[in-house]
Image 1: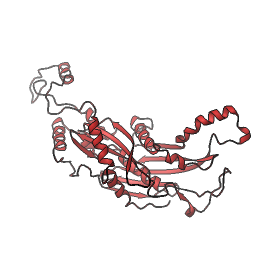
Image 2: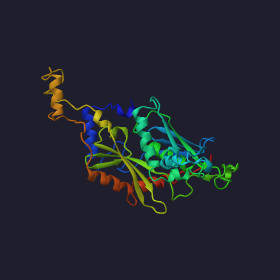
Image 3: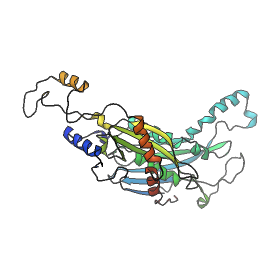
Length: 346
């Protein structure tokens, strides 16, 4: 079980934190503003044998490394003219949409298997955002017969002290910006021949106006919206959203490419039990366990803390999205910070 789902807070502490975050203005445990991200350290081109790489470390000690490798692969529908028949034409036309498979993404989290729920769900969200507009898959085309297969390997160096989605997304973003591919020397549909000079290599994302997407984690605590939540804030969140955005090429506007809800760990917290239903201070319990559970289901406890139930309304989702994509919003602030990271060459 990820560490961020183990919440060592009592119902009274959870209630106090929930009240602090839902006040106006909200009081966060670390003193940040609602849209402020935690400090981070980032660097690129740290793996000399990779096409691109990056390392990002958050202030809580959570650290991730991403390496990108590219291999030439023959396109399945790129066969010679004499080998094509009518049946192959039908099958190939159906497989033209399989270009998304040219991107392979793997996540390694300490203490978890590759097929555990957290790595699988994180991989699905990150891959969905990268392939949303089709631009990345299009950049992997070499010619009609060959393409690049891109391997994005993600290593979380420490147990996830908080939900690691923003950390992994920012690290992938920087790693892809530093990714370079050998310059193509051959022409047309010939077998690809590349320039051996790495200084002549071409970036996967050639201009600042065309960049990989970023995914931001947003929570709501009643009417308060908070970005980049800590583990304590996740423990009292009413709803958690992962919003993936992409900067429109040639403009400074943002486009939402994916929105996913995340089951908040606050649902795993235990509600407080009033002294009238259970023993307190050495008093004899006045209700059985079955009666206590029945009262919880009917929401009749009136306790100091109740785990959140239900989802999030459309108006609140619209507010979250607007705070991300508006001019001068959170996406602009995050991108402005990432622009300060020097993009090196492996």
